[in-house]
Amino acid sequence: MPRGGLGFSVPCVSPDMFPHQQFGALRMLVELVGAGRVRLGSDDPFDMGDDDPVEMPAAAGLTPAQTAQIASATATGFFRLDA
Image (cartoon, rainbow, N blue to C red; front, side, top):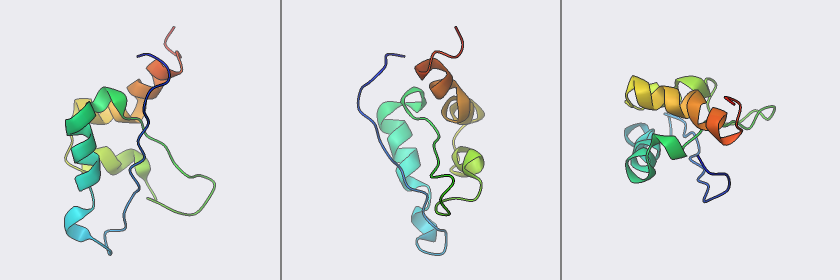
């Protein structure tokens, strides 16, 4: 994966706020750009967002392959950690 490029931020939305749209933005982003261009991030150490962001892709209904790509493989390639 090339470095740089366009970045996206998909905030974790509380299920109490919009239960029917909680994961819609993530699914739409993966459909538009592919799981290989989406990586997991957090606002840690700040107390906001999802309590378990690693589970978010699977909870959004993405495939195990897409979940693994977003949770690990995209960042591994981006930061060239597999070389």
